[in-house]
Length: 362
Image 1 (cartoon, one colour):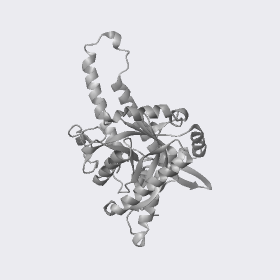
Image 2 (image 1 turned 180 degrees about the vertical axis):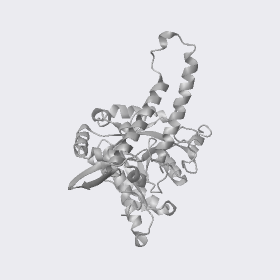
Image 3 (image 1 turned 90 degrees about the vertical axis):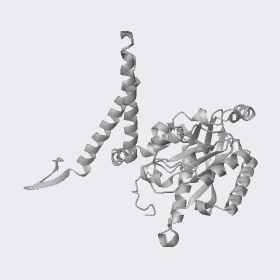
């Protein structure tokens, strides 16, 4: 298999419910020319460098970007007698801006691939010419949407953290595009190997800061202190760009079709995916427990000075702790069920009678 050591599953990837907007028909697909013109006239990015804080990506665009990225992996692995390295690919995104977000409706692959070290002037000029031709074709068709940015892949080794970041070349390219093409130009980085390994879309959106802007010291592109994610690779210049909150969406028709196709195999996905053994998930749970504990300690201190009338108020610390405990109990239960189904059953035959017996972990 060209994927290498990464296990292949029946479902290549899924869209996380937490990042999926189910009410998308009128929210993202409706074109409001007056609202877009107002954004372009007001130029809110001049007052707030992080004005575009969210990136909404359609399921269609996300899957097209992933398919293109995986084709680069396959093409690179096929070189040198099957011992080659995955190739990076790039393409364009079609969509529109809004007051504080970027909406990506479709993706257009470009015939540009290679290693970042080989990304020379000739390839950059070729990409620029292709961008111009695509934009001319869109305008000729009379489409209301426009080219809203670019995407490229980082097919690097799968680790605890994803490989969605901006390298030095990426930051310079994005900054150049924002200055020369469109101020709302946005970049998306796809981690194709992690998409396969984790069975979900792993991609993040980024924008470059203006040259005069200086973000707070020790702040990662995601807004968190760099020391909290010491193992995360943010590239050479993490202070020159920031990460947008990424959310996926699909139309009601696409949602119904997806539910119909996945109905019979949903239980297979649940049983085949184990979060307990996932190092990344364990690290996130530990951080969540730490934050919940801090909230709990703070709420206990405040409760001493509150009157009895506030006792019935919802406690965020208790709600967070309950949610974490519920998730862990669910994963442990699935682990026991998984063991009983696939590891703990043995066929016993006696006097012509055949039956299945559960073998305890003892």
